[in-house]
Amino acid sequence: MIAFVARDEHPAHLHFLRKYIGTILILVLLTVVIYIGEVLTPSLLGDEWGILGTYIDQSGPPCPKLAITARLFEGCWMPFVYRVAGLNPQAFHTAGMLVTLTSAILLLLALDILLPEWPAYNGAVAIIFLVIPADMARLWLAGHIIFTTMLFLLAICFMALFWRDGRWWAWLAGMVIIGLSLNYYESTVGVIIALSVLAGLFGRHRTQLQRLSLLAPAVLAALYAIGRWYWQTVVGTAYGHATDNVTFAPGDLLERLSFGAGYTLRKSWLDPMLDWLQTKPGAGMSAVGETILLAAVVLLPMMAVYGLFRATRPAEPAGSVRARRRDLAIAAAVGFVVLIAGYFPVILASYPGTGYSASRLHNLPTIGAALVIGAGMFALGLWMGRTPSRARAIALPALRRR
Image (cartoon, rainbow, N blue to C red):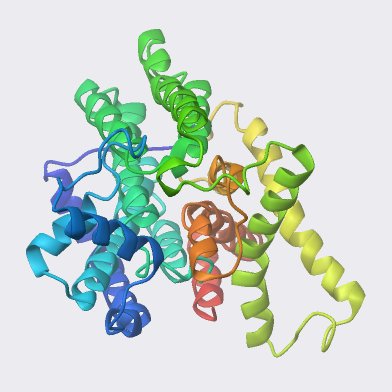
């Protein structure tokens, strides 16, 4: 499905560092520049203070009891930082910044495992994930979703190794980390199931046992989701749990999903691009122009899904333009799946809004948005430049305008 490069005699981690040292330095610099203001903020908000306050007041264990939450490891991160740095808001924000940077590097590593011949695209996706402003609470509410996202991406790295090379130790490590991430926060249930099914479907280069093992994360996530929901029905509103916004109505879920995906792609990416062009829909741009732009945002993932099904044909020689187009279509299609699945199951209980607390729900889907946006820009560059090197020369300056 994806062309791989031959291994050399150097250790894999050294090869990765040599290959992406410039990209990693850019990620570090962007992290400091973007998040330094939040790091210096002398306060905590909402869930952060609630988790930490409960731990301090009760002098209890670093992780909550099963009777209070179905997430066995929920809140472990905040007490850990408290034990190390005390009640220092800047320390908690710094920890959140490091977790966010680590997530971007892990995303870069996972992409390099699957697309080793696309370092420019891989780096662009990691940078987009880091800077896309959909999640405005990355450092404010660091105890929940961003730590879970980091664990999820770490698990993806191991499972990608297993998908590529069939290494059972990587599968075992990935399963353990997936279990940890699910028991920290359940925001990854949908995307774990979706990617697990895709890996099984497109794992025909693996043995039958290995393909079945690629479906194990989906089974684990589904079992956890069932247990989590059963626990919630038993507990109800005890321990401060709110159930007012819980819904299974298809119309409500579609509204929440469409708002979340639209906000992540349009408000967090397209509108800033239009601002850079000094063109705003409804003002400097006609209704027809706005419709065309919105249609492009919608049609891009649809075309990518079409390319995903076309990708079942025999692979062309590595490095060919057609093979790279196919790989970009696959990357965009997977990104669209992550974008949609990333909102499940959290939209069952919350509306993905634009405030600090609500914007947390956009954290995981921004991985998918970054894949889609990056693939779209590089596909456009490949179409305009006709060769991979020219595509890179066109796509990267376009992304830098962001």
